[in-house]
Length: 310
Image (cartoon, rainbow, N blue to C red; front, top):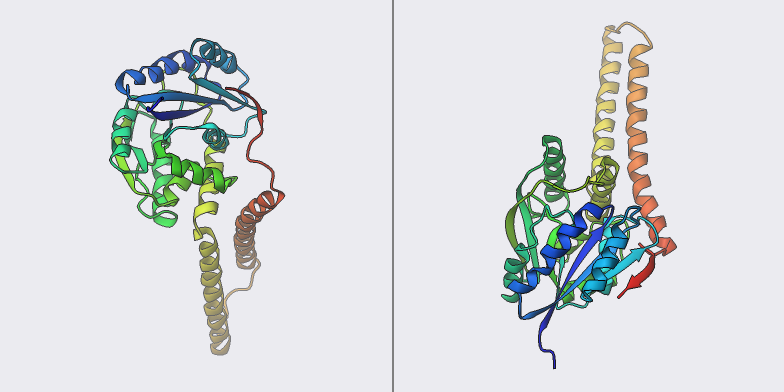
């Protein structure tokens, strides 16, 4: 009878053909440091158009511990992770990117924290070998997340994590779309342990984490976990109303004392365009919430699995 604990590792794949030949061996070498565990590797091909799927299937022929999920198209990394968690059968499950910017060897320490009773073990970036603009965007995003959405959120953020099977089951039951899985894991509130590390520079391939995807994640995170955008609109509306009221009093007083300013269209046009800009921004924020409500009400799945190589 097999009494070994099972450790599943979920890896989303999107145009990673240059990484696979380096990533798979490093993940497999974890077995040497974890002899008491049975390892399971779950790679989720998120609609890649390169040779990623073919390379993964080739690796699977050599090692049956490797499982491959092929999605019907590109649904995004969060949906790919959800698909991987749905297939994972481990007592604990690790999530890691395929580009090796996060060291897989850190899973050994993360498992020790898990065995000591922590259901969520986060590897949080204390620094990163990336460009100034990337650091600035990431630091700003995580600062806003901690301040307005999830109190205590790690300053360096995280997407390299190990979670207990109970947490996996809870995420699978939620089935939420347009969300940030990492923020959802944090929101669940289980006992957490944080391991700081320095994220390495990407050595192979080109990142497909584009600005548009970053902006979508930013919006998804705040719409899903924060009421700050709605409060922001209310505050702007209140401040605008107060300013308009004070300006009205100012105009009436000046009319009574005979100190009427020079008439003209410039100030009127400026005020109108300013207020219209605020209204359009507010409508856009409301639209983001309404779109997500509509998307959830349709009950379409967050991803479509084309084929599973199990």
